[in-house]
Amino acid sequence: MQYVSTRGKAPVLNFEDAMLTGLARDGGLYVPAETPQFSPDDIAAMAGKSYADIAFRVMKPLVGDVFTDEEFTGIIERAYGDFGHEACAPMVQLAPNHFLLELFHGPTLAFKDFAMQLVGQLFQFSLTRRGERVTIVGATSGDTGSAAIEAFKGLDAVDLFIMYPHGRVSDVQRRQMTTPTESNVHALAVDGDFDDCQARLKDMFNDHDFRDGVRLAGVNSLNWGRVLAQIVYYFAAATALGAPHRKVSFTVPTGNFGDIFAGYMAKKMGLQIDRLVIATNQNDILHRAIDTGTYAATGVKPSISPSMDIQVSSNFERVLFDAYGRDGNAVEVGMEEFKNTGSFEISQGAISMLRDTFQSGRASEEETSATIKDMLARTGEVLCPHSAVGVKVAQEYLGEEPMITLATAHPAKFPDAVQAACGVHPDLPARMGDLFDREECFTQVPNDLDALKTLIKGRIS
Ligand SMILES: *Cc1c(COP(=O)(O)O)cnc(C)c1O
Image 1 (cartoon, rainbow, N blue to C red):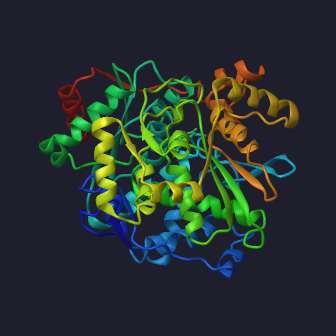
Image 2 (tube, rainbow, N blue to C red):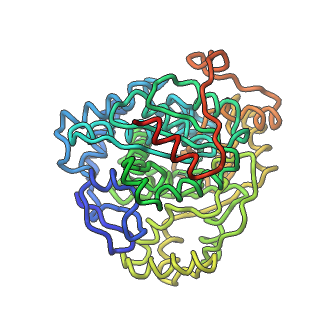
């Protein structure tokens, strides 16, 4: 399988190089050159299989022949062996035709584990056989950093540094980053906010001497490997509820558009998906774009679903590429205009494709809290605020076919918002019960490029 950039000017790469490269050199994002097709028989054969087995079948054609079947099976088994639920992505029922897909049974209790655990094993395998070693630096507002630390800890082909804003992540998120003891993972508490962390990360990538010297790599949400992993649970959930013989719909709480893009890929690959619903919180750039045809950034308004508090939905470019008939030039022109002016008009043809493909809705802060309270009363389920945004929007689109809403985090990751909404303090699962007893280890660093560079160079030598 070959991978092409959404801006059409970067080299065409195989899966392994697209994954190790991350962002394309022309500023675009890598997408598969062709879409593998699954027949109804292929899909029927997934019903009742293990998560690892479905993962192999779904991802294999997208990965191509860069690994043997045996190697790829091993990678998948190592990635998903540490989940707290045998089904990896189980479902519970909320209403006669509404199901919740629990994506929070991984080691850090959020769906980012599905992608990060796989990417960790893929990096380790590919780098080891090339005899290479890289330094991964990331910036996080919480969930991504903890998922990365859990995924990369103890892997000897990688040193991982995660910058987070000191004093501005939740206690659970911070402890998940600061309590692993493996010597290749480093939690850096930066004196600044999340934007400062991201700006320093960008500075490091733009400092070519440093970048080459430490062999800097990234695993942010633009990395194709992360999208790849997320396609799997759409197949697992749909076949569990009757695909290919009956269609299902999905509602996806969305920030960077990564998770819902994976659902779009599953549909393109032949999965029987009826509706794909985009659910945003009050940071509703995507909902407005589908509604009005103008993709326009406004400032971020902090919400109780912080992992969806984004200014720009960076993975949206991947679907725009298809909406513009895979015309990389048109995508580049639109994205440049957006970068320079903060907004651009989506063309008539592209917006009609997007409206045919997606529906969308938003949940206000009050609606999100009310949904947590209401679901507890009606079903006994305690939702995290991100999942509640999804459930609220899904309720507007319930129909004949089963609706599956993605639950993106465990409520115990956001205990204060949950308790304020419904009066219940959600407990950590038993296997993580000692999180608050473990010793924390982190390094406080000033918001300064030179200080960060010196620290990183010193730690990896
Ligand atoms: C990252 C995240 C999201 C948003 O996912 P995208 O792929 O960025 O759309 C939603 N909920 C939680 C809990 C997250 O951590």
